[in-house]
Length: 277
Image 1 (cartoon, rainbow, N blue to C red):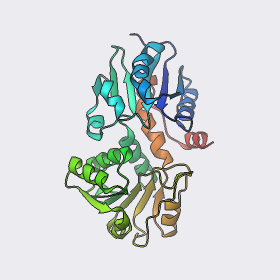
Image 2: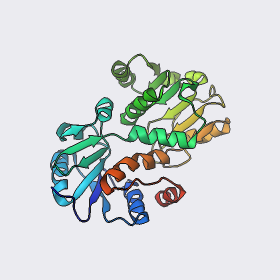
Image 3: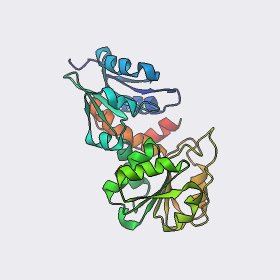
Image 4: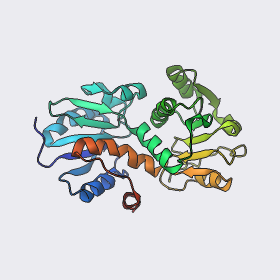
């Protein structure tokens, strides 16, 4: 295989029309005057393997993978990074010139880069983190926080069994908390993270009491539609520093774009404005 004259990349999901990734990557392509394009790819589960295997022959150099394919795609790629193996999901594929498909996960990188940009005073050793939710995003964030040195992660999910499964997988640093008790442990938290879809436009509200939340706690939400979720607004009203979820999307795209198009892009206000528009 040789690199195509006009390299292509895209995002694979079902549904996919809501994705902001094409806007982001096309902004970077224009900004750096690079040849190429990035397109949304609506792919049903039964077609995933055939599509992924076909894309390199169509001029694609890579792809992002989103819901519901992040776990399934690991079954038929040629190489999985240690990070994606540990998380158990991939969001970035690189189609190499030797024909091999490499899978990686940049969600944790995106989360940490966004957190450090939005709350530069945060120190992993400040204290425990409380994570709401136990899905794919939570897995990536748990790995990132553990790597950063967060001493303890309090994990609450509406289905306790999923939290218990993550504790069994990631070890004693995880403390499982019943969903209905999540609000009671916030007094110990240096960081509160919502990884669920609760609070997203069209979804139910996140009904977790913040009565015990300290003003010194940093609060972040991976939901970015709306940008200022009810959780972030309630936390700000209590004096907390808050970090919205858009930056996680933007930063997680940086490593893939660099691998596909040969230029490491910047995350700045112009990009945020383009994606929000």
